[in-house]
Amino acid sequence: MKKLTLIILHKLPNRVRFKISHDIANTKKFFETVKVETKNTALWYNQTINTLLVTFEPEEISIDEVIYRTATALSVEHGMTSVKLVEDFEEKSIDLLSVYSGAAILLSFLYGLGKSKVEKLQIGINNFTAGLTTAAIMEHAYRETQRKGFFDIEILPALYLLKSYLANRSVTAIALMWFTTFGRHLVLNNFSNKEVRIYRLKADNGKCFTNLELMTKVHNQQANKELGDHVFFEGMDSDNEVDGIPVFYVACGS
Image 1 (cartoon, rainbow, N blue to C red):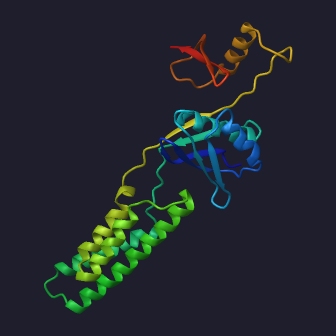
Image 2 (cartoon, helix red, strand yellow):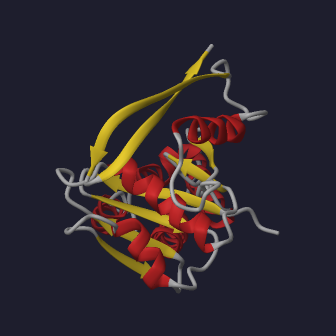
Image 3 (tube, rainbow, N blue to C red):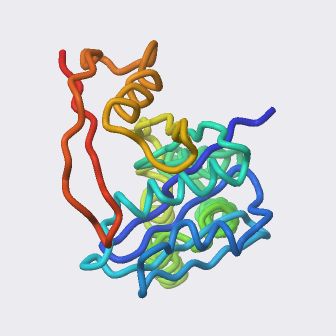
């Protein structure tokens, strides 16, 4: 079974866009979980490409809370399953067509360095290379739109360089087109993975927790978990209330 995954595609101070591995069946309940106790939070779910856009007021709710509320809603939607949260995700987009266009650019450069080159053949090679590179860029834009709901701004200067090529037929313009679009995808990706596990605790009396009972249940949920060096439960610190909801932080010692 495919791992339940929440990918952060893009984030700004007042909005964040996610890619979700599984469909949202009950959007009403999902949205309510994310929006609880906020007035200016809005969600748009694109079922076709499985992306979710959340906009919010930073003065009302922090971006980190939006992210973890979304992970919580996704976990609850799928029976309290743990959620793999991928942050700073950047997909490498060097596919076959972009590799072929890069090879064609190299071939065009090498032919231009030859002493016995034919000008008409050089222009023909350049034109073929320009067409192949343009096709690779268009495919890249389409794939980005399918994955994230929009294409990266780097596409626009690449198309401007195409106009420059049509004016002077220089292979240098094609090379700049290629590197403008695909250059950043040549480096290794930097992203961090977290596993978010949501637990629902129930009071023994069905009404409310005693202090000892709550601490015991929280401690038991932490037992045998990968917490790095912070493996010792040292109690809970109260942060009073947020929008009327009691908030506690678990203190872990090393």
